[in-house]
Length: 133
Image (cartoon, rainbow, N blue to C red; front, side, top):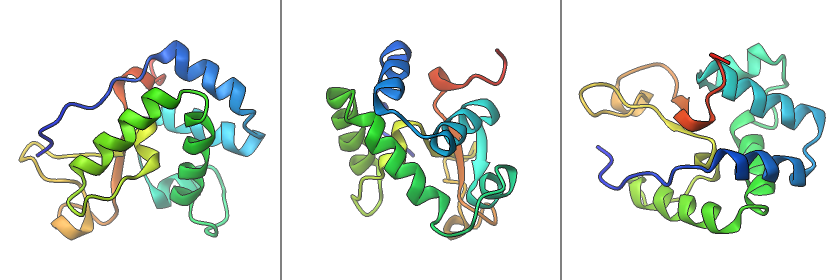
């Protein structure tokens, strides 16, 4: 179970960072979709957006997050520190800027390794969710 609280993303700063990052249409579509659906897997995101399987969408998401993170460096640094701290192998994942692996009520990550689902399941951070707007 996560012991350290996640740095909450200032939404206005995130929105400005996205603009400054000059995301291309594909990148913006990925961020918008994640923020709208809230929960996704790599296969569902690839299918929903009709993307090629290569490069893997989670790698693309990390590249997008680094572009955005350059424009909110203090927050992105905090997110990376948190990401490394919560990872069982102490590896940061830049996608944690927007979303993180989801957990079930028993405190287990939703992942094949934990025997809880077929694919790693991610949830957008609450403050970035736009599905009800």
